[in-house]
Length: 383
Image (cartoon, rainbow, N blue to C red; front, side):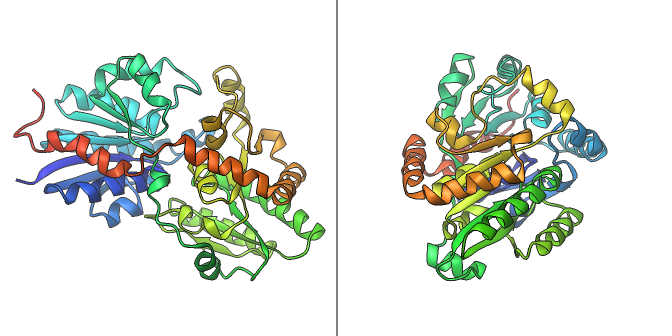
């Protein structure tokens, strides 16, 4: 009998991670998956109730602007839970949305597996207590998260980070695919997977690279565009990049930027999964983070971590530059990119440390699929 799996992934990195799990599941049992996601989940055969581009947002102002799309997606998912007999739900990242969805699913007798834990180590640790009754199992992506969640009574297991599953091109092959100048020092520009990130960060990033170009010979750059971006944002990015003579490149929905990051010496990137992918690809990350003023004011009283860039969080030290809010200016970004180029050999050792910190867990999708299998083989949902 074909079992039914609800999948909710509202971000580009979550879309890729969820698609890998669904693909692994299909090798083990017949499953019909549907829910919220993007191009990667769709390519994996998941029926989309809503496209993640309708719901992706971060920061209070951005969420408000996309509230209609988010509400519509929620209604479609809830309607599906009433009309379908669903054995299990795979909730991937997308913390605010999924934290509201999990209790509803639990009340309806649907097993809930959360893949990619809310970052309680960074802010709002009280979320763990609210989620505990409604999440049957949690698959965490960072090694220290297992201990944190287990201490709160959640059945959490470290499965490894999806960035380790990327099938990356070799450096020469990746440089050829991107059309990069032979022997040039190369800089990747990754302004984010959300529209407001791109509009806030791309301009300063391009300006920074132009400043580095003026001071040095043979610098080549590419803007890597996430598949989660809507057409207006992609057009905006292409127009801005063209003003600086920097080509854009559409990254693979299934592999993300990590597939081509080995081509680069330095990656100027928004905070998030891309910074970790860059470190693992040995494209030394320079991380930028900008949010609206209201979000910044609230975050000052809530954020508990000393670092925002995932590589630095893993290493518990500021190994890589992270420039927040006003510090993410063209002048400072340019200075840090130049420093990363000049000290790249030393920073590569920190990249090695990041990989070591993640441990030897390299098959997270398969491990998450195994966690789901007992529920999908049951004759009915939990009473």
